[in-house]
Image (cartoon, rainbow over all chains, first blue to last red; front, side):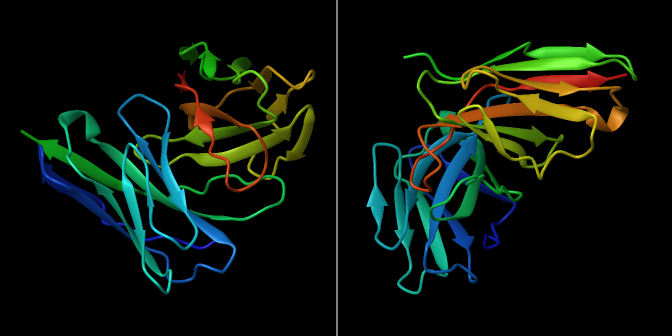
Length: 112
Length: 115
C-alpha cells in the first residue's frame, strides 16, 4: 500500500472548518483513500473514504486532487469533541486481508 | 446495534504469564482483524480472519502470539510468556467483507501492561 504523509499536529478554533491535508504521491489506480480518527482511549473510528471523486457524509468532506496525489479532510464546523488523532490511509482494492496501515496521523486540537 | 466489544478492558500481567484477550465482533461480520498499538503510535496489523479461517498472520511479532476464531464469530488473541515489550493496546476490528470499500469497526481495545 502507498505511504501517506501528514503534519504531526494542527490547531483549529471551535466552530471553524478544520482542513487536514494528506500526501500520498505513490498512490496507484486501485487504491482508496480512507480517513479514520482516534479519540483518546477509544478505538479508531471510520470517517470517510474515496477513490477519485470528492465525497461528503454527515461527518466530513473528502477532497481528492485530480492527480490523486493528495487529499484534504474537511470538518466543516469543528467542535471540542473533534479533538483526536486523524489518520489518512491508502488501502488497496479487492482481495483478502485488506488491513489498514496506519501512519503517525495528525493530532488535531480544537480550541474554544 | 451493539458495536465491537473487547474484554478485559485492562489487563496487568507479570512477565512470563500467559494472557487471553477476547473480541466480540459485530454480529454477521465476516472479517475480523487484530491490531497492536504501542503508546504514541498508530495501530499496527497483527492478523486477519475471514470467518474461521486465519488468512493472514504476517503481523504477529513472534510465535508467542496466537489467535483463533473457531466458530467464525468470537476471537481470542493469546500471548504466551508475556514480555515487557508486549505492553500495548490490542485493538480488534470487524467488517462485513474483505473488500476494500467496507470500513472496519473497532472495539475500545484491551490495554495490556506487563510488569
